[in-house]
Image (cartoon, rainbow, N blue to C red; front, side):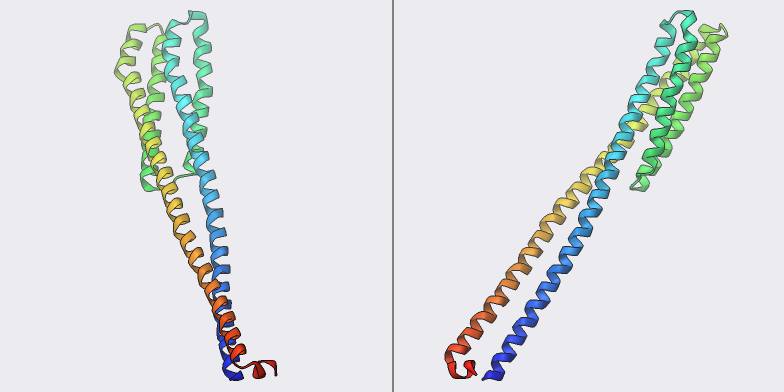
Length: 218
């Protein structure tokens, strides 16, 4: 009887240890996943801020042309020089966003945005050159033919990129919520199993000792 009791205790202990090890492994894995989620969250914040700054810079650039036309002749050169900082902001933030790409769709949208922006910038440069050369009517026609529509296309390309980035963020958030729910159930099941094995071992040992008090005391 004593041998049977020891066998039961050893078996129960082994099962409890196995479950405890599973819980430790689960805890380590959860920690790794939480760290990964934190890194993804930081990367998403960088991407969102980069697109926000890009949008602001593009808006400033689109306002430069009407500002240039309304400015006194002696201030127009300053307006043109001032817009260079917005080009720098836009390009810097597009480069920052490029380091956060999550999909081929985002990479393609970024390539399209850069192409549209380059076409828009070149059209703007020609507009300013024409106007500075005294060919104002030709400059205005060039603006209507290229600058305005190219600017609109650049805005649309940026909007597509923003939509993709937002969709990725929402999808990632849903995945993380599902992951939390799924692993909460796993941890709960392991905890219940461990408690059950400990309780079963205690009850079995107590029952055996009560049935054979003499052997249990040897």
